[in-house]
Image (cartoon, rainbow, N blue to C red; front, side, top):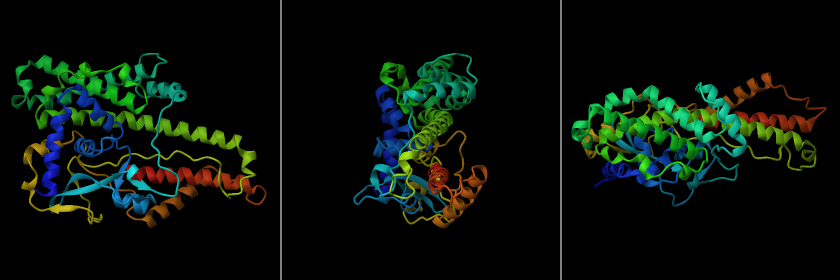
Length: 385
């Protein structure tokens, strides 16, 4: 068995394991709440190989674009990719496999001090008709509202595949109730987990009873793709809120530390380390390569039949909405540098710097703050895409 056949087999095997029972599904959701930008298939393979992964990117992205190096002996996470030559493997590495003398890479997080703002903005964004000061309750209502508006499309898909699964023993109404409940509970669980809330207070294995009835690649794929689409929508919005709050907190700290900055001998340091906006990349279910991208770290197999379970694997990974990969913002470091210059110019127009001659320290602090914001924008695009 070659590596591609092994990873294809791992995909099929793990897809069955994650729906074996509620506990297995919750452990899978623990991975997806960080990997929500990846396709369902990629999420399965990341969970199978590195269930504790939080930020993943390719070797080239870490080395050439992020200024980080892969640690010696680190093992890449193999993902299946469709290329113009057939099926092959591409590899990503978790941030824990990297090192650098630059600022550490951090994912966004939600602490209790942010709850009121998150509640307010989510309530406005999703037009919730409830008034609550409890973030868990708000996330639950967001989940119910999203599922209510989208479950019918996924139910149509699911009904096409019930004949070959354990669902064939159940009626149409029962299948609908099961799908809606699993979609709502899965989304609520993932949102709470990613927002650092204690899911043990709200969920246990029984909340996912019936998950074992999804026992074919197609039925598993319907629920998995539904969850991926919805969690991406909500967590992307929460991430924006969190990063804005973190940046505002950092600016407040910078202002309160202005006197201390005058005593800092390390020229240009503002006294804090800003949070990076880093998220996982975005890809196809069985990702398609793009012309012009480096294929050196792919193992290419021309024979598509080397994918174990052929058609089943392809059905499992078919996304409901996403059928193409967005191009990366920059294809090399010079592109990133050019964009850095352009964004800095735009930022300076909107936020003019103090006079450098009369107030050098204030100028340095202002320029460093703008530079960090621009770097955050660029790094976000590189990892998201």
